Amino acid sequence: MRLTKYQQETIKHVLLKHFGEGSDLLVFGSRADDNARGGDIDLYIEPDLHEADDIVEAKLNALVELHLLLGEQKIDLVINRKSGNFLPIYKIAKESGIRL
Image 1: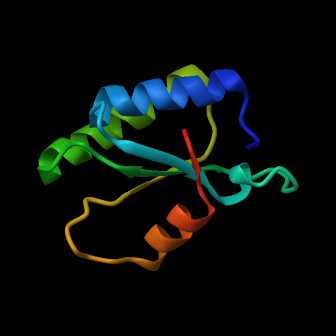
Image 2: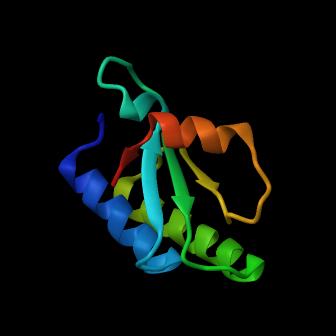
């Protein structure tokens, strides 16, 4: 995984703080590949939250906090509410992702 220990711990702490301690977190995409270069930070989360308004608020607050702590980087946050709606990105993230 091409994230420093500090970045990993910060991401995990911030996302669990905003989305709930029972949330599942994965890093996927180029940052999950030790042989890749560059790239944004792609994060997949199955939140402990259930209400859409709570999830939107958590996403905005988490991204603001991550930018403050990690600096200005491109961070993509894919959220799967487990609502039965299936998007191909969920499968890609779960198959190639690394758990935080």
